Length: 362
Image 1 (tube, rainbow, N blue to C red):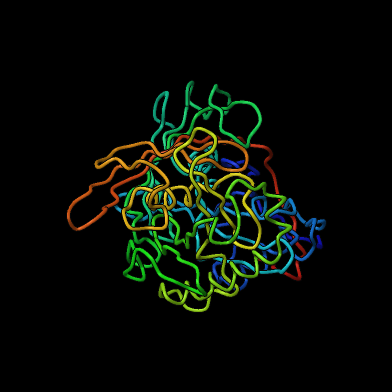
Image 2: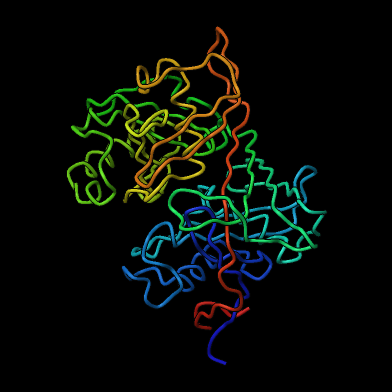
């Protein structure tokens, strides 16, 4: 046989999609692993025509699962962001949308047993060390994907997946405010550099001459904005202690504006070289935390409660996302405790994905 077959589940997680692998079925060496994922997803072509990627950053994401040896966790979740066209793989970030399918995939893979009508799965996101509890619906001893929960950006309804994120403040950089400041000025633009679930650089849309209500298509066509944003993002990454971020998808970038559709605050999230069609789960926690923290670029955009938990409703290009944030507000400032969301997932296919043996032969 001239190809190597690798077992996988193909799943939608939240508003993203990609293959979910058992980590034991993949090479341990990260360089070899990157080559395998590039071949499997078809990175290097705008349509990923020679792989199972979907020609967009939200459809070239990969989850790799294993039983955890951590005292707290049941499952380890290792994430990879595969680029659409550049043949690059980034193992630094995690992805909360893909995480929405991790518990269901782990159960379907047999990594742990079902426990009643609902099963709680404790997940360690190994890229960042974040701890997440996921509650999935498992009536009749198996995962169900049918249900009445709806999320903006996905047609129809599905079974709810409740996610509770813990220990995510400073999970990537070691600090809630990696630069030590609520506002830094880079290239004449005020930004807030924050690390909650995802390290981010956040700015006011108006400072770029934008409204913050632009469509994804309008933003993606604005090459001048992307050039300015990327220059700021790279400089901010260095200030955050993240080194040279030229080829890394982190830190991510976000724009904020006052709410215009009945939410708490309007947001646009970048992946970072294209506009996210909806909103990232990890990024949503960082943006919600920024909105709640005094002295950030979000000042004046929404009424801030003084104690948690509270729901922050983020407006994104395709609707709304609710983030329930538990926090303390003291004289020393904002302290993030946890964040909760409800997402959905669906198993789309199962089988083997094939790559050339020249890329990897187990």
